[in-house]
Image (cartoon, rainbow, N blue to C red):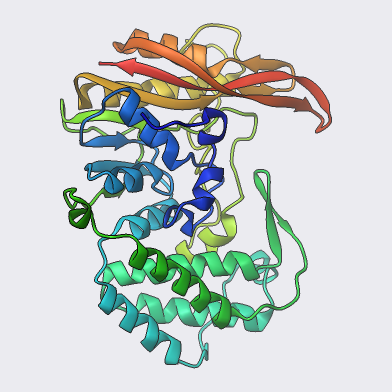
Length: 373
């Protein structure tokens, strides 16, 4: 079994050191090491399901082991990263596309974004250069090459924007003008080098697999019954923030979406006070809605697993001004109620809760909740 520090493995931090996994920093994600740990500990067989696949850590980790996997997510940004990191590329064709794109002189003649707040995040020339390369990439016929180049450009846009990601928001911060072309092609070179250094699966004695990454809502998706040999996922974490805006710049600029529901899209509408709570009385309304949505996800995933297959949910407790919610315990009870067999709860790390940004109100666990069909 892979040795892993679970307190670190449930975060994206270790992926910063992992080729391909580190192409796009996705702060909400977990690490490749966590996927390896779950597959080994629970002897998961392919295909592996991730109903909240984010930027594709489960999919890429499975591919690197020669295991087929399927992931779904509601965010087009996350899915772009997942697909770009898991495609099987023609390296020569990819290299030629990059060289041809590099020959072009950035001259943008279109219209800038209509949203005033987007324009204010960039120097005018910087934004024009980004939009020029975006247009040229979207004109390309090869979908795989488009995904590769677009992910590189998305990452570059984040680096040259007059903004930083802070917590669950995007904060404006003035930077000196940065050279878009130089940074963009430097990023593509870095990504291409990772592919060159990563031998295809057949060269390592493993089957070549192509993961599936599909835009869909886990609350509403029906999967093929008795199909999956394991499940590894991290649902949106419960907190008092209904929407996260940390990726709103990328979504507005590249996907014509002003806000994302990446990590808080479930439980987005508070349950009625008079409604029957999913996991018992006493929860804040938004928390009851959250667990009602998780129940929908569990009911969709249970029939999709093969008999005896394990399902691992990485979940964190909720911090509210006047209450701490033990999400792992509630999820375990909920899973058992819908028909899963409880296996174990593994606490991985403590999360500090604060009121008014400074006053500590307690701690909640981030845990792995494990079920068996």
